Length: 225
Ligand SMILES: [Zn+2]
Image (cartoon, rainbow, N blue to C red; front, side, top):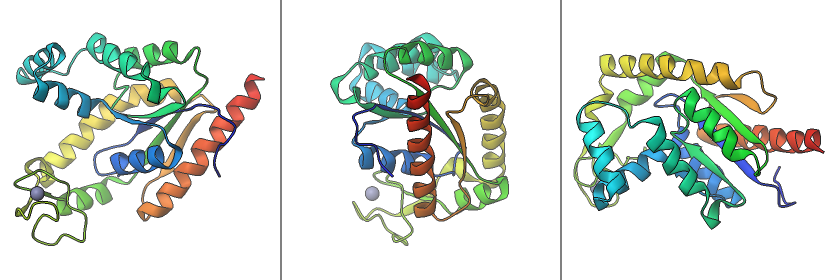
């Protein structure tokens, strides 16, 4: 199923670490010709480029804090205003708070409905997946299963991510659920909020997401008319 009548596809993807959210967001974005907007990537790029935003973000993160709502909202508003996002977007990593979510709703006023999908995977499966995850020790690339010991991009050795140990993973999942519960509560009464079972092979999850998002988008358009 795809949309071809020019309606915008405004999508937020939620999901715990290990749920495959980044990969799925990228696939959906590519398939529908909308940008995947990851606030983590934007912050990392800003830090690397030493912009004013990067300076603020780096100082905040160095003190162990999350970058504040105002800064994050400003980043997303600016990014959504660019031409490539006119037909829609897939947001990954935003919103993280109810304040950010309601700011995003205000930005949607003139853009049409927002579809929110949460990819759900049982905790034990996530812990197993994350423990098996490897990254390149040289260039930091995420290793797909085909790379067994060395990086397919630069030949560097593959290592386990330092934050993928069992105890740390369970703690990260706890933090995720604590932070995300208010967001899910905020969105869950809407017909455009969808839960996707992520405990399936990636291609099946891709298909389920595609169907859910396109249906929600079409349904919301009919309601609006
Ligand atoms: Zn590498």
